[in-house]
Length: 210
Image (cartoon, rainbow, N blue to C red; front, top):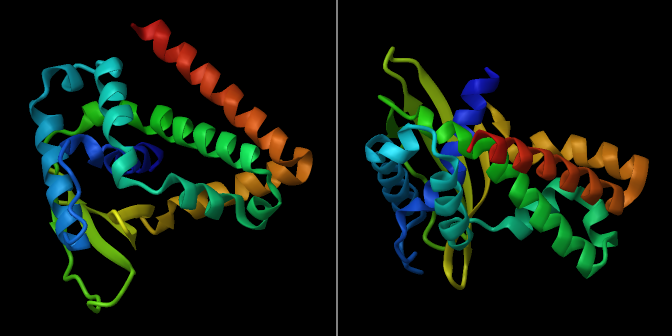
């Protein structure tokens, strides 16, 4: 179950690989469908990704993820009510460390994309909606369907993803409990320090594989 969740979260993090501009008037379901299929195609055909080349994965994620994901909202939701008590500098550091943690944690699973395919559920939203959910599932070779849903918000620059549901668990909620416990124990600075230490270890482990 842990591996499956990592794989699906990674699908979310890597959707920005497409390298195309996000049109402000593109429907959210069409945006998710287009990017999902493009990343599937890239992951399956890129020999470096298939061989587990982490630098290739990191370069793609770092270069393309920001235009498609609202990390500020994602981080603020995970931090909960403590977000309002954090200084602007603390908020900036927390966003940076949380983003790095997600990239380190899930990008390694991209090379595991092999024979999976995507199916999307009917999209239901009113034209005036500014927050929507796009529901999909990953179909594995054995026919098993794995839930993968997205929450998006409409900003001036277009639709951005701020949360994902994998196998019934929303990413933000998954981290919220951990963040709350760490903040209760050692404050916002303690959470930032903990995330930074985790990222340092992950960076070291990645460097050791090169």
